[in-house]
Amino acid sequence: MEQRNQTVMKLAQTALLAALCYVSFTFLQIKIPMPGGDATSIHIGNAFCVLGALLLGGWYGGLAGAVGMTIADIMDPIYIVGAPKTFVLKLCIGLIVGLVAHKVARINESSDKKYVVKWSVIACVAGLGFNVVADPLVGYFYKQYILGQPQQMAEVLAKWSTATTFVNAVISTILVAFLYNAVRPILLRSGLLVKQKQQKTA
Image (cartoon, rainbow, N blue to C red; front, side, top):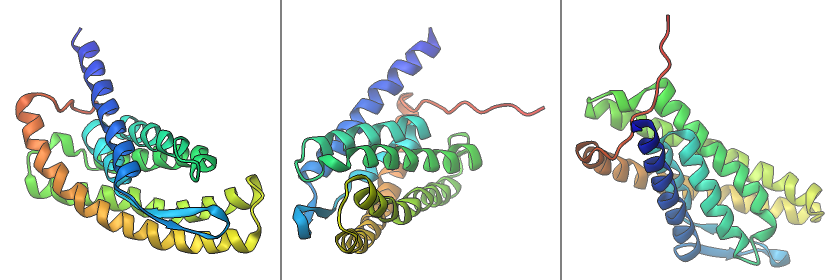
């Protein structure tokens, strides 16, 4: 029964974070129009994907980001064609952050505030650093070979995407470092932070 309650709680929290990803991307973005009717943007949607991975684990956080931001893409006529790419990349961000935070550092088992702050930032940098490289690179091949966009146009978009993704990563890392380390103690005291399961070694 306890395991079932924890799963229900995680799913509810995942849905909330997916909604935050959607809202922050849809309504708080600065869209930069590009040639050919495309666009890139500065936004904080990734921050809630990373926050979810730190709070709930990689799969749940990644799923929150993937679902929330894919829905945001689908609802936007400019971004709709990139929705499949968004789903995969956001899921990967969550998995990487979760791997570093919970499998390597095991931050949910630590009560050392400095340790938790350090590793939450490292996990953010790992996940969002991956995205800085992967988003423009995957986007370039996706636009050119899947969507048939001209090479020159795909290159221009990739260059702009690299710049905006880097800015997004810096902003999101700062935001998440503050939010996670502010919210974590409150959730622990209220019993709303579900601890990650760790495999025992022989």
